[in-house]
Each structure stands twice: as structure tokens, then as C-alpha cells.
Length: 416
Image 1 (cartoon, one colour):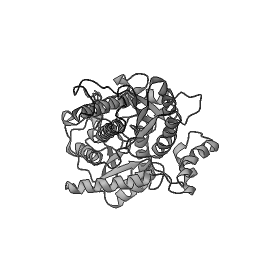
Image 2 (cartoon, one colour):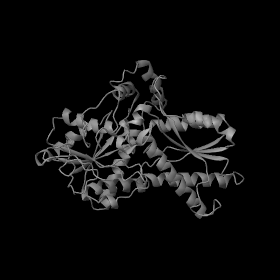
Image 3 (tube, one colour):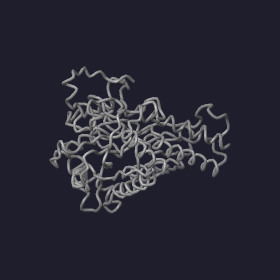
Image 4 (cartoon, helix red, strand yellow):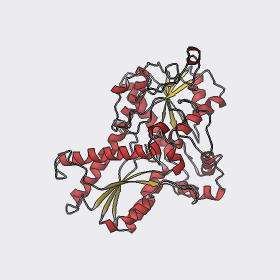
């Protein structure tokens, strides 16, 4: 892809057009090819409650400015209260932080890992305060979300800007962000392994089962408003009605299926020649809708999709939490609880494959993404498993707008 022509004069080029960026990213290249000597990694999480008293305050943080009534928050709070008011996400990020530190140490890379959340303690402002106290001025951020949309990318970038303002560290701390990693091998490989193993297990336990007609793979991700989906990714890419968010998920699902099926054929579990085409049905489905009925969201809902499968002759499903990096509450409640229950009600066997979590390939891949930016790796040398990548280092103008809230100042991208 050709770099965007910003039409800058020499004087204008001297001004930073990417707020809070390092020198290498300040002018907004699509892919940064200049090495940058970072001081630390900022692991940016969503955050979650860690006790019953935290649940409603946490949900108020998440929904601030959206006018969500208290009764709706209480409905969602039920999911957390089912697990003692404790979201698994903070412990998962503690485990990921530790795994990153081990991977960095094993490779002789001296980069401390700081952890901060958008919506609960420890907050991003706490991580930035720690960075400042330790003398770190150049941070490379990893957001714990792989795809492009307002909530999975731009909102993190806006919260970086807010945290810098809250800590009065404007001009003292710079934050770059690794590219969206939806098609990086480190993220995709655990899903390939999970789908392959799930289908193989079904066929071992039920050899009479037809993979071609009686098993279906459901790739599940968080639903978002269709308006937000349409604005995900840069508009000049022409992704269609549901934007980069849906296009990225579909592209990754295709790669997962093709690789999993080829590996099953290589192992003799499925017949046919390797590379002869995908022979197990699959579809992209959505979950965790939270908006009012009057607002259109991405569909089909996973439970609606499951209900239709027996009529198509399906007897077993494989649920793939493709939109998630670890076992968030949405995975534990919406998939492990509701979707599995729906499958049982319709006489379907169901298994849910693992999220990347702290899988070795995933942790290694995140470190590799950091090194891309540290070393200024040329774009042609960056691994990606779909034709959509490698994604941008610096988000393009107008990318992932929230139509209801409008543009807010954001780091790691060209304004607005």
C-alpha cells in the first residue's frame, strides 16, 4: 500500500501530527521503518471487578457517557455476581504480564512490562505514573484486543490520551502502539490448533459422524452496533457495510479453517488431498449484544444460529472465541454458559476451543510485534496470515469513529 501523501511543507513536517508519538511515528507513516529505543512495554487491559462491591462501579466506568440505566447495569451485574463478583480478566492479564516478562528475559530483551487498565484498578494513569517515576519516557503499548473497531482500538488510544492528561505528563511521555494483530501468526495459531483438535476429537469419539455435513464451526466475536462496524478501519479501504471489523474476522476464520482442515488431512483424520478446499461448514456469529432493540447490531446472534443448525442436519458444533484474546467474562458467560446450554437444548454436542491466553505462540508473537517497532522492521518482512495485513502501525485519519460520541483526542493515530 502506498503511504498517504500528507502534503506537508518542511515547516509543517516538523510539527507532530500524531499526538504523543515517538519521533519515528510522529509524521504518521502507515508502517514505521525507523528503529525506536523504547524504555518499557505498556500492557493495556480492559479491566474487571475483583469483588462484589466492585461490580456496579466497574460497569459505570465501562458505560460512562452512554446513558445506560441502572436497571440494565444490574442485569449485566448478574453475570459477574454468578462468579462471586470477580472477573477473570485481571488475573489473566497478570498471567500474560508474567509470561511476557519470561519471554523477554529468555531472549535477552531488557524491556520492563507495565500494566494498566481502561476501566478498573490498576488504571492506565497508574501505569503512566509508574513509568514517570522510573524514568521511562518512550512506551510501546500492547492493547489486549486484536481487531479494528472503536471499542477494540480507538477507545484504547483515546484512553492513552486521557491518562496522559490526568497525570500531567504531556510532553514527558510518548506512547506508540503495536499494530492490530488479528492476522499475526502468534494470535491465529492457537485457534488453528483448537479447531483441529476439536474436530479430531469428535471424529475419534464418533467415527460415524460426518465432518462435511454434521459438524459446524461457529466463530464467535463481540457484536457491535452496525454503525460502528461500518466506520471500523480506514474508509479508503472500502471494506463494505460492516467495515474492517467484520472483514478481519471473516479473513481470519477462513485462514483458521483452511489450516486446520489441511492439518487434519495430513494426519489422515479427514480424507481428500491437502489444499483441496475446506470441507467443514462454518460461519461467523456474534454475541454479547448490549444496545437497545431500536439500534441495529451485527448478527446473527450465536444462540439464534445454534437454534437453526439441527434443521440443516448438524449434530455437533465447535465454538471458536475468535474475537477474544483470553477467557473474558463474555467467553465464560455468553459461550460456556448460554451458548453451550442452547446447544444442549437443541440436541447438539458442543465444545468451546481455548482462547490464546498465555499460549507460547501468542506470547512470542506479542514480543515479536514489539520488536517490529523497536527495530523498524520493513513491512515486507512482517508476518501476516491474511491479505488484509500487516495492519497499520499508525492508525489512519478518521479510523474507527464512534458516531454517537464523536472524535476525541487520541494517541497512536493521525487526527482525527
